[in-house]
Amino acid sequence: MAINPLIIEGTEVTPTVVLDKDTNTFLFKGKSLPENPAAFFKPIMKWIDDFSLEPNIEFNIEFHMIYFNTSSSKMFLDIMKKFELISHSGCRVAIKWFYAEDDEEILESGEIYRERVDVPFETIMETE
Image (cartoon, rainbow, N blue to C red; front, top):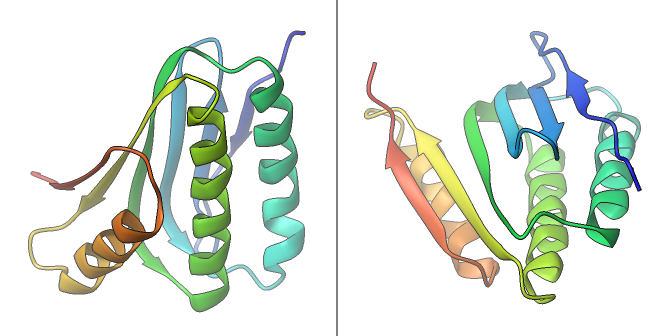
């Protein structure tokens, strides 16, 4: 089954999202405080569900977030849990959580996610 890439250009209130099976790119970047989180994240969840039927054998999911609200935080955990389920089918899945050197809040969020998902999870300081 071919699965088309899902590419969402970021705005002031929504992140850039790139989900591309063919290039093995799984990226969330920017700010996430959508007015209607369920509507914004629905196509992302659907894409991951479709991807889970024939996932890549090995892939990383990268988060380069600079700010997100509570509802986005919950959606990110749901996304990570979906990828965790994919890893249970034998795929090598890893999450890379990037944060700015002076952004303790984003780092702490990554550490909380790391405790809640059972996949290799790395927090990485971004260098300019």
